[in-house]
Amino acid sequence: MATEPEPWILHVDLDQFLAAVEVRRRPELRGLPVVVGGEGDPTRARQVVATASYEARSFGVHSGMPLRLAHRKCPEAVFLPSDHPAYDAASAEVMTVLRGFGYPVEVWGWDEAVLGATVIDPEALAQSIRTAVVGATELTCAVGIGETKERAKMATGFAKASAEKVFRLSSANWMSIMGERPVTELWGVGKRTGTRLHALGLVTVLDLATADREALAAAFGPTIGPGLRALARGGTARTVVAEERVAKSHSRQVTYPRDLVDEAQIREQIVILARELLGQVVDEGRLPTHVGVIVRTSSFFTRTRTGKLATPTADTEVVTAKALEVLGRFELTRPVRLLGVRLDLA
Image (cartoon, rainbow, N blue to C red):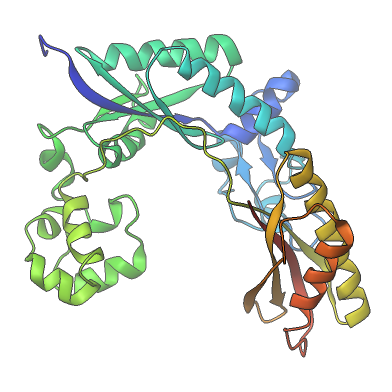
């Protein structure tokens, strides 16, 4: 145990967040398999799972799975629609609790954040955080501890599997725990990168950590290559940015139950999306500078195009006209599966 305070980063990750928020407001669902996603109707096409409770996960249900498949795997599950305002509010409650400890907090999303603290006993602080969060919000969390954000993030995976729900990955135990694990267990290293690393003979975390920098730079580029080596050594990010994140853009997308083939109908849907999204942006006191349109065809090919407004504006007619202008740049030769509008903000 250290006798002098040391700087640590604690990664706080809420458990099954969306499902937990739903259970909190519907206590009768506790202990039942709960699936949240889309409109909550597993009979509708093109609806996907956003989150499944641990009870539902035991049946093989997971995020990103079509709701129809989730229903086949677990027909007794309770299917609920996504409720973004409720998740925003619950997340804000948690972040308020974290900030109450007096340390800088960097929010990463609805259900996770990192906290920077110079303390003697980071495990004690982690348990205090867990107790405070559940006491104030009824939501549970796991906490990963490390000297870097990367180590703290990866430590959370071990925390979730532990009885204490807290785990530390540090310079003292990093290589003994991670060294012989496959490179794909590193945060941000997916199957494709893993395959490329394997082709270079880099199979384990230790292999990557001791790889030649120049060879990695040649294979992956001067930034990504050495960055992968640094990640295998535990990462380098140590600064917690406490400022509130201000969104640079907002978007809204709809996947339609039936493909759209009529151009007039497609234009009508773009206008609806643009109007709804502009209303949200204006309510936040923001103005758009650019209008983007997203089109995904029935072949799953997705394209995005953007146009700049002459000046930031809240004028609905101007914004919808720009959205239609951008839509006009697409060759709509295939049925449309998904449409979206993005507003870049001043």
